[in-house]
Length: 313
Image (tube, rainbow, N blue to C red):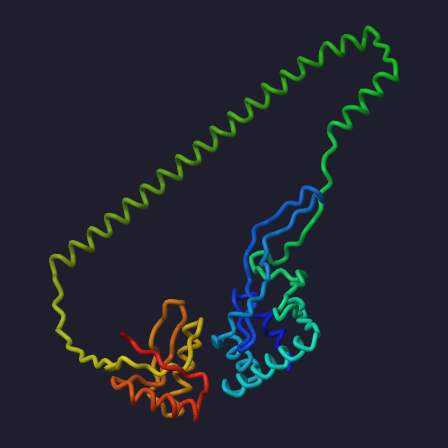
């Protein structure tokens, strides 16, 4: 089973995709770069890296593949863990692993090395933008070439040419005056337009204020009495010891997990967000720690080996 295509798809939307039991692929955003040596402009992008320490299952990858393949979560979790185990065996044997569109994995000195492919820009806001090279403008070189031509070619100025030459500065001054007059006329028209729009906006605002004052006066003069409604709210009494089913990056995935566990007959509920920003789902909670440990042992044997106990102080 190949999971690299699913990892590549998730990296467009998330900055961390964890392969349970193996490690996490991280995406770091970078701004646009100008390479002055090669005269190349590179658009903003995401740089992909790998961290083998982040191997705890967060449910993102497994839930995504299970939804795409329309199979159960636990079954898909076993398949993904099998892929992670196979990757580790191949790396220990000295092989390298090519992840299409992502990069290359290898192992050196018992540490996993990752070389990103850098062919795909995972930053969606830079979609359609590519690197390009611009040739620098050689202004000084052109000036030198013109000077060399002036030195080589003799110029003969006739009286008619002198008169034409002496008339050219007046043309420059006339062009400057014409440009200034055009800018002044344009600015005046723009100012008039802005004043008209400002007056129209003030009139519209005044009408709205008058309407609101009339409505407020109407309700003040004719108060409406509403009957009192009493609502009874029952809140689940939680113990201090919770048997955790999983922690998810997206709250929607946590709610799906709660629904799955309830279908299996557990008193599952959404516990809330922990200090790492993950949404926790619990099988059940207990006041007695011995009951919690006994229930955890039962869950590990019958439903999930990844369940664990969270005790509040």
